[in-house]
Image (cartoon, rainbow, N blue to C red; front, side):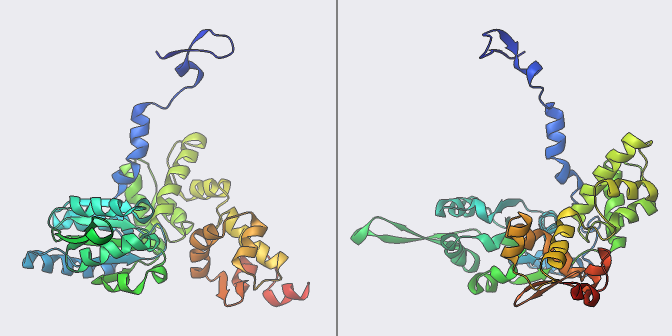
Length: 354
């Protein structure tokens, strides 16, 4: 029991009684949820078939040569499995993987420390690598190309340059914005692949696999119902299966079928396209406030009270993929499909109302 003095009454109280805490085992479960459902092999990694076949050949060739893999760059919308794929590659190569993100590498010593700690053949995974600062990027150039670090010691006239060799390693970079990578950094990756949105059938397989791990009873039509509203993204599918399972457990007997899945997703305000309130708010604002567009992203962000990066990184990729939004030099426009989906008249009739 943890005892402290209450500021107001000066009485001894049990802080755990006043402020119940989550049990340690519950914290551990939540922390390890992502790791528990991450595939460890290509056989259990669902989707990205063409990419998997290409990587299998590359990995087999590297093993036969007894050399590390070339540096890899994965790009595409968030939630498609870039980090998971890096873990699978490390598992197949039989090496350790160190995982970090570009925003965490603020100072030169951060990236230098990680590079110096690598062992031969190990994999360094840097997420959101397009956000790497210029100094860290410059340090990576010789490390990636020639496997050494250029370091300086001393000051003014006593400055000396040291060249420190590094063990051969593989850098795997992941980004949602490949166009923001500098040319010199992008050119140093020997293998560059784009991850595609998943089909409904592939997502249904992901959902069935996750449900099996979490011991959730779900029918094939229930898995497909969730897949239809998962925006082609495994991360969203895995999140939705937990929420639907909660609904089924509270309202029914815990088993998930198509009817229950649809009811649960309706309660969560996720429609048949997988759009949530923010997505629909974005399209509605373009149609009602700006006559269907075009309108700038900053203007939209201000109108919705959202950060412009949230709209660009979270909402727009799928809206563009689904054909509900157009991005033009003058700004964003709602497509006729968006008008129909939101229950408006067709685009021409709607614009005539303004």
